[in-house]
Structures are given as C-alpha cells and as structure tokens.
View 1 (tube, one colour):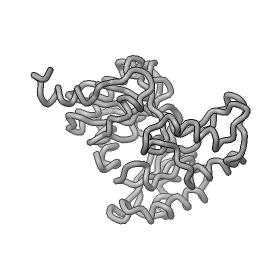
View 2: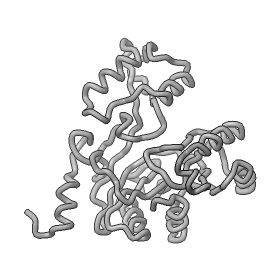
View 3: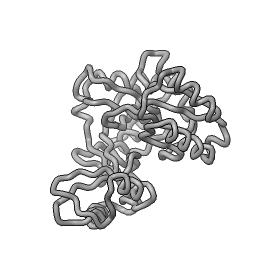
Length: 264
C-alpha cells in the first residue's frame, strides 16, 4: 500500500474504481501517455510513494501547468528513490477517510480542507485566527505559500473581507495538521460503500487500514466513486474528540478490544 501504483493495480483487478491515470518516469513519457490515454484535465501529479500530500500538485489545467508540476516532483525525495510518478484525472467529489479493522468498517469521516466562511465584517486573516482559537496545537490553519497562492488565484489578500456566508477553500489538501476538518459520516455511509472499503482492505492484506474514498454522495448507492489510496497505518485522531465534528468514535478502545477481546 505504500506504493500507490501497485495499490491501483490490485484494486482495479477486483473491479474497484480508482482514478484514471498513468505512471511515468520522465516528463516526455508523461506527456505522450497523457495524450495516448486521452486523460482529461484537470489532472493531479503525485509521487508513487509518499504521504501528507508531499509533492502533489492539484488542479492542473494545461500542458504548461503539467510540465511545471512534473519539474516540481523531480525535487521530491520519494521520486528520487523510485524515479516514477503518477498523473491522474482529478475526481470531483467529497473525500472520506474510512477505517477498516477486522474486515469491518469501524468509522467514516468526511474530510474538509482548511477553509473559512465570511461574515461580511472580518478579514480573512481574522477569520483564520478565530478558527485557530478553537483548535488544539498542531492542527491549526497555517498561512503558508499554498494559502497565499490560493488567495492570489481568487484575487484576494489576507486583508480582504468576505461576504456573509461566502465559503473560501484555502488549500486543496485535506490534512488535519494543516487546518482540515473531519465530520462523522459513519451512520450516513451507505452499506454498498462499506462493502467496497472492506473488500479493498482485504485485497491488500490489511487487518487495520485507512481507505481514502472520493464520491459525490456517500449516502447514495449508485453515486460515482474512486479510491485514491490505502493507508497501512492511518492516524485515527480525526475520528475522535476533540477533532471530530459530530459523534466521536472511540477507535482507541476498538483497537484494544481487537487485540485483547476480553478487555472491559
């Protein structure tokens, strides 16, 4: 599962959907394969092996932007080891982290990227500061290069005042450590998606794993979906208080109960 290309191959063999894409070694290969396989923009470029969204470029909308993303990935430590990267079509939908243990889904959390909602009075910087006051250390919104670039794309600055109820996504990655949010969707998740995630974890031999699933509507059985990756040692803090929004799932207890069935 640490190799995203191998994970995709295993999942596709058992008819589980993954993003359409190609693996390439160099820029020239990538451009030829994108054209040959008729991949549609927007695209994503990511390393074969890495985590925490390192080296990933989202929302690539032209050949020029694709080349820029590939040049960026050449500097990624993971690429320097594997000499390979993925180019995939960008699936539009909500992302969920689904925890599977003992061939059963134990929790599902909707992941929301770092974002703010305007009130018609506060600047973006003030909205970020207000959000951060509620967060524990290590999980606050960082005002970094990605956030600044997002503001520039939207012709905004940290001193801009957003209209009331205007939602602004500050970054593409959904890491909790960058200010992302998690909302409990365990009860809303349709049983068909639970079966898909359980099958995916079993296919790669994991007793405990985290499935990253994207879909338009996780409560509706025929909604399009893709699994973008499987994590062999997923952090579960986003499923417990104080980070989870909604009902907390006591993953710590579930893991202990799995290891020691007689525990009270």
